[in-house]
Image: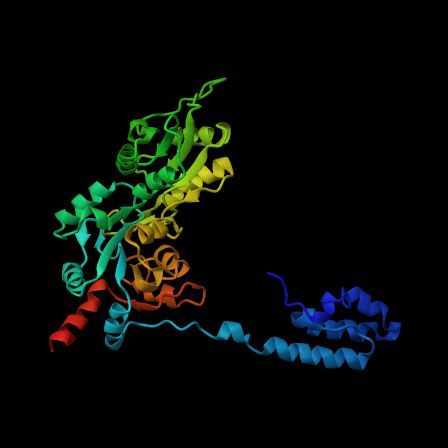
Length: 378
């Protein structure tokens, strides 16, 4: 950390304690040095010393400033809890709700209480509903099956996964059909690449491969790989990391694409598990390259959805459980934002002085919106 800088510093009028000592007479050196030591906590605010009186006055002022609290640190950003009186106004102000899935709709394979009723109420109010997940392990078709299996009536057009976003991104940049993609990830990415007719290798086929090192061993890799997609992979291994590294580093123009960089994910409702950020981090470390991220909070999926449905972004509310993906995704995109505490983020984290991402509102769970229905029926 650097000390606060006095304007005199910027003008080169103060450098070091030694300079002060040279500018006073020898019989004053001891007293000057003692005063300087006493004001060391505010040394950066001490002006050039021209006399003992000047030193004392400025030292006292500097110490006084140092003891006062910094106003910017003392003021906490306002965090608005969603009250009953706010709910209908929020819902009425938007046309579309975009929901994260893990931590908002479900945890693992367990539906969060009150979600079906809330979805039904919003549909009855004429709202468009879209479900967006950073989890790339399933394709859109796979997620639709999960929704239906949990008893939620969702259509395929309402579901967007980061696996779909990866394939849609390659399609949007006219990825050459004669080139291939190496996949660190699971079946969701492979199914989406099949859907847009892009060749691939890796993925589940490399899940059991091992590297056995011997003198002079060289791993071969396909020179036609022009993109590497890194998604969540429960069977990630050293072979996949090395293969992806070789493609990115040695194939000219090879793209590095990450479905997301989430630190943790909800594989079960019992605990949080290491997320795709750990897989992406391994490839970043070995290639010294930053990936193109297509999932939240990057804007690609939002732009795709807004264009597809012709929605104004200020008519969308993003509902999520993560500050650094869902809420940042919404705020960067100009959306209304609602944080639910049913997933990753708790109230202490939200209100922490270190947190700089603040939603428009927060509430405990999505089903808190159901009081709108009760008030309308009253």
